[in-house]
Image (tube, rainbow, N blue to C red; front, side, top):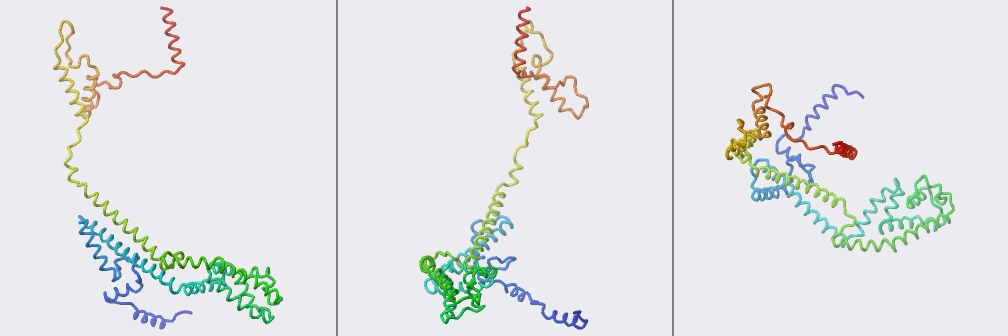
Length: 376
């Protein structure tokens, strides 16, 4: 249906009246409307009962660690917030355990019966799985037996079940509509004797299961609950445990980031500038060669009659001379484009190791040596 112009204007006037709070105090109060525990609240939303705890933890952490930067102070605030919420989570967990122990001592059967009623509400929609869940506890078996007792009243009067009673019997057995044809007794036109036999078999099965297995287990589970061990924890207990796990991760991550920042600040940048500069490898090699030259000059002069005179200080030292020429060519590479004639590559002057020979080459060389010896 199309909206007329008058209706549209009326809707606009109505929406202008419901714009929410306008003052800062009203906005802050409205932000707290959906806040129940505050375990996952963000953007500065801290419940009133946690404000003092967060401030206390923050002061304690600042006095203990003395942050150096604003980033470290912010990380400590995150640690303090997570620590306060963790304390409250642990307090609620202890309260849940104490409440569970008290209820196990005072109203165990009533709580279990209420849980059975919640499960049985899904019996018409999913009879197979729901009937199986009802048979997991002694209270569920009692609930099933009570319905079978109600179905036995018309059979005592030799009357068969009507359509609704047949549907109830089928759901108590965990039989869906697709399997009803497999049980002739679940038909309203069936013989009441056949229906009574079916009911007796189901009652005996549920009663034996309850008395021989489920009731002893129920007594043990109740005793454990009195001691604080929850074999079937409540949804509230599991929710608080999830909150605690998440907050513990936030606490550990913030503390790790703070310690990493403190470790990075421990290495001061000023100390890196005080290190001596790295020596130039070319200058270092020149100094080593000059030292070798000085050592050769300090050696006693040879007898001119026994050794010929040499004008070069590197006479008899071709490797040192080539090293000096190579360094001069590297150091003055920008001044001249063509290399000096004396700048012979160092790799060509150094002795090369003999290449390893394989067996065939070695035998050929030995054969040639023997032949040369025989000819000589």
